[in-house]
Image (cartoon, rainbow, N blue to C red; front, side, top):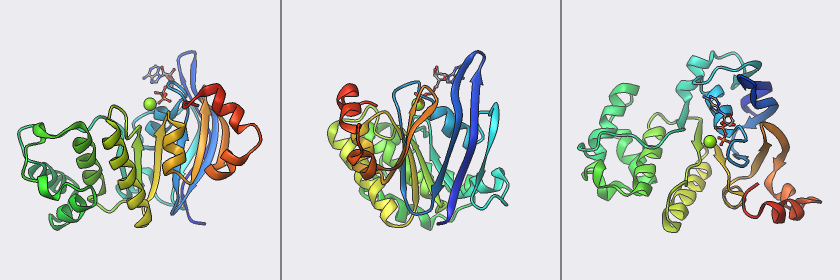
Length: 233
Ligand code: ADP
Ligand code: MG
């Protein structure tokens, strides 16, 4: 197994609040990992730390084999941790060309990535005319431009209608099938069941479970957990 991300005893405190507590897990290449937990369980904080936008309090993490600096490793990581944000009065294509310039990626990658997210036909439309689902798909295309080893998504279907949710989940599965490792945070058990092979379940910053999704579902106590929390863990 080839490690992509290794987290050891990670802790994050905001003042007196412990947002992430002594968290350890490993992400291996070629799988789809979910971080599952209710709002406030520390999912976004964990992603922020490994993406170097939040400072950790204790513990450590490393990318890949551990011999690459985080700065260099992050060049091989695609991430969407905020609402998709592009220039509203520029077309999708113009926006992605700008991203290519910033990332030093050739323009010919754009068509390939727009195809993956199903936006080829709409590439000459202004971003402001896009639905929320299309905006999210454009953000995914943008995050894929540099052919990352891993794609990180924070609540990728939040706010979308059922059709938009279905489209995004199918796209994520397709990207994974093409060999890109995925790490997504979600408060929806349903999302993890449908999309992920592996899961880390968090509650109040602590790990409740980590392992295969199918094993979690067939394990003793799972149905009780599920019925107690309905669709949200
Ligand atoms: P999740 O993504 O699972 O909803 P977060 O990682 O966003 O959870 O938040 C975990 C806890 O840390 C929450 O109680 C949240 O209010 C708190 N928190 C997150 N960011 C900050 C911050 N910048 N300052 C203070 N508290 C924060
Ligand atoms: Mg969050």
